[in-house]
Image (cartoon, rainbow, N blue to C red; front, side, top):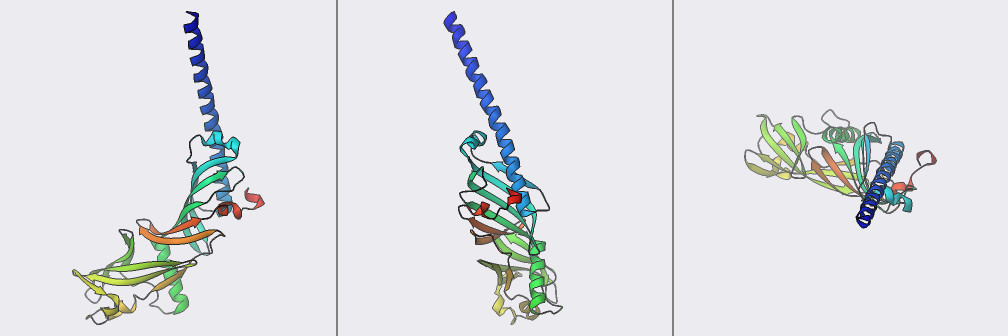
Length: 250
């Protein structure tokens, strides 16, 4: 009888300790998430929502070691050099002093914002009233590719313009490649020879859009389109996410 009672006491004590550890973990994790979100908001100054989640198990208890593990952060309405983007990042080995082991991120430019950037680039280059993308065509995504869809030509026929997107460290280039119309694929460089295609062909040249300067240790690695806009893929080197922090944002 005494042994059974002692066993119950031990089980109750273990459950109590486990519950206390879980409570401590949740409390510390909540504080860490709040601190990370506040630091992100301070550095990026977004106009929209900021969130931070710790992705490693028992992240709160890991805080005593100074390493919180992985973290996912997002910030909407980040403005840089006149361009508004939505930022999301997955970071490794986030420390309590603000450094990281690197990671990956995306910066999403909405289609409306991208269209404005292309028009601004064209205005600066040509200054003419026909600058920008052709009227009647809307930017969108098709299985990760950037496309323009709508109507064009004297007969306002439905068309889809397929593009190739390439990246450099400080820019993105959108190059129209083919036009789909009435079930036919026409290369852009042959479009001018098609009756009624000359005007559209003259508006489908490559557009190189300059990007805001990236922080040190952050590298643009590619781009794709989805239903939100043009998604820029970024690689973050170890320590880069915390390298630009200021005393006001620690």
